[in-house]
Length: 291
Length: 315
Image (cartoon, rainbow over all chains, first blue to last red; front, side, top):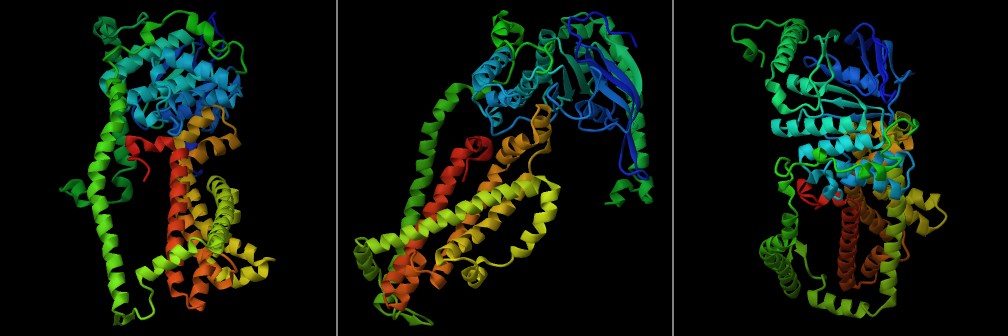
């Protein structure tokens, strides 16, 4: 790995070193992540892409501090990420706003934990909400917002505590295609403005290309790093770039890598969680026979 | 933040704002689905709601009047003609007698004192049950240790109806008053406890994870996430608990009381003041209704987010 060059900010440096994560007791342990090493340099936007069940969420949860490594280490700025903390902001796929708090109070939540006074919290939350174009909704409850707006508030809330890194677990997975594109632009803007490292999980190839500096492709379970693809497209990126030959070439490359793994993942699922394991014969009528 | 090199938004939000308009971040009008929440729509809501309420309420009001009217008419005729058809109306006071006695009692300080004493017992017993039930429910729901130590005990005691505790309570507590309050407390404690535990168990785990990522302490998690997230269930428990509290209170007052509306009702029977029995019953019903209403109002005040269209309002 190359040493970090002179970035304006020397924090938010994530190192994943020979990480293995196993779930379950020794005999029946399932390996979710297998010998993964990767790096997020300060200020970098990194995506992890792979078939479902490849352990990419598990990997993110180790960085977040929710899951402990079975082997290997994960550290941020030299410290192991053994428990969750406000230095790593997280945005979840499911909407995770507190329904009993207004939009502004949601954003203030992390600041309150840090002991900021009500005035400072409000000031900071309003500034951030203004940047995200949400100021007029500050007194709304989450249930009054659209899905895209909820996720924007989620991002703003995660940014409010000034984390060194933003961990995002398929944050736009539940949104419709158009909202998704807008959200990607908003996120890119936020990222450039705040110069923060981002570790972004997705299964959407276009999303990973549009957003990232580098993309890690993971294998089917147990998850390994299959490839590391740099995205040298210039910034700011625009949706039109999706038609450039350079973009298409990257996309083709990623698509081939992922299709291969997806097929493997499906085959694997059929083999190990499916029919053979339960010792049943599937006759000519197929699954219908089992039901 | 611990690190000085991190984003400066918290340290100096004004500087960030002054940096100039970052228009790219502002939503493009029409692109984002904000239109669905235009302010005009929310302004229209009250007028629409009132109209809809009227349309729904008028027939309902008529039917309510009719329903109660039929009951009173039956009561009137049954007592007038001393109906004796397995159930006997020989000694039952007529609506007129009840009304007369009520007018008389409305002047009586003693009667008001009985109401006051019952309400005070409810307030104290139910209040203690709320504090203990919610606090223990949060602990049992959230922590395995608390669950392991306390839950078996409560599960053993729970099937014993509060009224079955009356003789024991009289021996346990120094005064009659405290034993009645204890019975009232017992009646409401278990519904509140169980619903709180249920509420804690149904908190969306992603909210807990989100809070942890925002730097919440263990106690902060309980107070700022688990408690508010469980509030809807807690209030279900409070509503049920209030009902059981009244059941237990009236039974306890009838058995061992010296004052209170349950005592008043039983005393009326002993003194052959049959009209007063009906008055006692009606007052008990009305007080119970008022207490449940108070719970509901409190719930609406504490959970404004539940009033949204997605929740269909608080019932």
